[in-house]
Image (cartoon, rainbow, N blue to C red):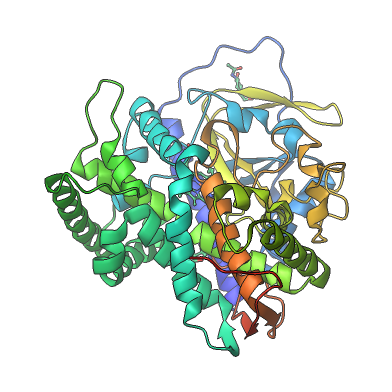
Amino acid sequence: MDMINSAVSFAIALVFTAAVITKIARGRITVDPPSCKALPPPPVVTGSSIIRLLHTLLTKGFRWMIQEQYTKLGSVFTISFFGLKTTFLIGPEVSAHFYQGLESEISHGKTLEFTVPMFGKEVGYGLDITKRTEQISFYVDALKPSKLRCHVSPMLEEVEKYFGKWGQYGTVDLKQELEQLLMLISARCLLGNDVREKMFEEVFSVFHQLTQNGLHIMSILFPYALTPFTLRRDRAHTRLSKIFSEIVRSRKSTSNQVEEDVLQKIIDSKYKDGHPTTEAEVKGLTLALLFAGMHTSTNSSRWTGARLLSHPQCMEAAVKEQEDIINKYGGQIDYNILVEMSVLHCCIKEALRLHPPGPTLLRKVIKNFTVRTREGYEYEIPRGHIISSPLVMNNVLPYIYKDPDVYDPDRFRPGREEDKVGGKFTYTTFGGGRHACAGEAYAYMQLKVIWSHLLRNFELMLVSPFPETDWRSFSLEPKGKMMVSYKRRALPGAVFIK
Ligand code: HEM
Ligand SMILES: *[C@@H]1O[C@H](CO)[C@@H](O)[C@H](O)[C@H]1NC(C)=O
Ligand SMILES: *[C@H]1O[C@H](CO)[C@@H](O)[C@H](O)[C@H]1NC(C)=O
């Protein structure tokens, strides 16, 4: 029943998001000049086929719905539902424009309107593209690899402290443990020591209120309607605004304090014309970053664990790598050593190929464009369509990924490099092009800090079944508990230096 509810709300969300966007798009339509070389539109799923499609969605889930149509219609097709047209673009050959198109050709449209009341109209999708792009560059700058080194020791400290509380042996719900840990690391590295030490509980419980209510299906569909959800969302937002303005003021008044957290980098960011970020912008940018980075990382760390713990050979290889690194460097870990953990890197990357945190990315077509499929068919995608790049399908194409549903981290190793087979947009878990994830390097660093610590210090065993994918929300989190039994160990050669 749960499954059905979830799939239904997912379908409704997709359709209504499309509805909202289409309505807005219609309002602006002007007469197009007739195009000179008319290409056909993509094949369309309508009428009775829709019923079958919905059946698959409800019984099997989003991925299988897409896969069925892909098998039937190829890599480009449109689903037309109550006059709403969503065109799916599957695979690297037809994805370049989706990821690289100019904002005047392809945009998020109103797909992310619900984030405006969550983070404030001073940031992100509350703004025009020029200012938004400048703000994104603050993130990119704060999270680029050369700026990440300073987060390694605070991350290690949080991880050591957290797992230090585990006993000699025991059984835990790893799903919950990782969620808690990710909150602590996010507090420390993104928000800073003052929040981590003094306001952790408060900030995260209010943030939870904000996201729970802001992401409720009603708030996504009707972000500005007066509902219990939007009211709770707005109350949380007001509270967070107050907390953040106090933090910013207190930091500005104690000028000798040098913080290296991401919040401080956002406070210190300046627009091209030289003016600094305002309190409201700092609040919005920080909340949006927490939103983009925390749940995605939580679920990624969970899936990495689920996959590693159910593939003994991969686990063994990852542990062996840790032993080798310990032999080389002792117990010490720094940024470069994390970068050297290529086996663990591939294990994470492969878990994220099979379990991208979101099932699809969406945009709106502002200007007609054409695509050419692998088979040589050409289609024109008309403006007004919603376009979808379904990560859950892109990542399992059999002509790119050998045995696509098998967990095989070696597929990324030199000699195979299946993630490069189709060019830039072959592996799409972190998006790509114009809106590529700004936090990818940070995310890998964080996942490696956590999992290298676990591999070095514990023997782990998954005692509950391998988790199913939860299709209940847009986020593909593992379903149910992940019960894991652990026993402390120290890898040979380990000399732990603090
Ligand atoms: C494994 C973890 C993560 C995954 C799979 C992931 C995935 C993605 C994807 C697919 C997008 C593109 C969305 C689109 O095109 O519509 C994106 C954007 C973004 N991500 Fe991540 N992300 C992760 C972690 C993080 C972290 C840890 C941070 C920051 C600390 C972060 C910050 C951002 C930002 C700021 C953007 C917006 C970029 C833009 O709009 O130009 N992400 N992420
Ligand atoms: C865009 O596509 C629509 C529908 O196929 C078509 O009617 C229109 O003429 C096209 N516009 C341009 C500028 O090509
Ligand atoms: C994954 O995990 C969190 C728990 O931190 C859950 O509440 C959320 O809905 C999931 N989110 C995403 C975006 O994957």
